[in-house]
Image (cartoon, rainbow, N blue to C red; front, side, top):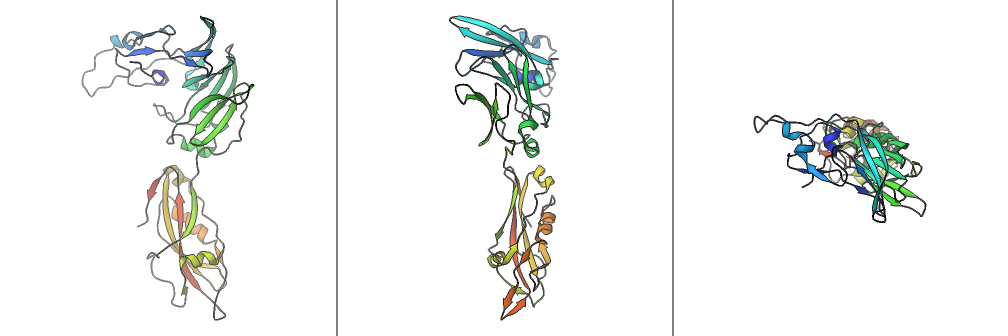
Length: 337
């Protein structure tokens, strides 16, 4: 049995069972010719395995006193040496030993040419409160001689909104693929979205735009009106929701409040309009929804305007209701009372 050891060296975590077998796992290029070995365990020779208790000193730790007690392992490491190899005939050639900072390294990607090694990490999904920031390392590219070629941060690839989502969204994934006979690209995937980086130059090949779908607001008609309070004056003509929407000539949507984005809130706010003979919004009534959503809805509704309504050739006041929907793709849905 082999244990994933990278996180042991990224922060303090519960150590493996002393009898667990550990290895510094090689990562191969797509063509299999080149491969890199991140030496998370320095005492362990490449392409071998050993007991966790012996390699990590777990056999000498004091015994755990109770079943509820925790014992953590805290290696004092700042870099991980990554060995780059080439298979040639029946030989295994060591090309370079590249020290990579632990904060840059989750795993590595190896170019088919053998000329580049990329350290990649998925921010926001480690332990130890690994909260992502724009400055968090994402992709760090090294030449095969061990020199740093390009360091790419989360903020270089992701928008401010993306950075906010990384903690809870599905983890980013990284693949290295050929795009032509002369170009290999690192592909960063977030769901259906991709961002490409030329491994030979570190050049970002796609414009920075949102990786994750943004929360958005939209308006629909309602099939039945809600009881929003006392009705407007008796001289006001009531029209159904679909007709009210058809009467609108300017219907701005509300901004999604930032606090609601961060809290991943979705919901619906029902709004009843009172419209003057000139088509101007005189008053609105709304159902409540927290995190600033109902306030944003009212602010937008007050900017609506309508075509005047004529009955028997006379302009009249009218009222009707619509539903403002706030939809967050990664969401906690809140309903109105």
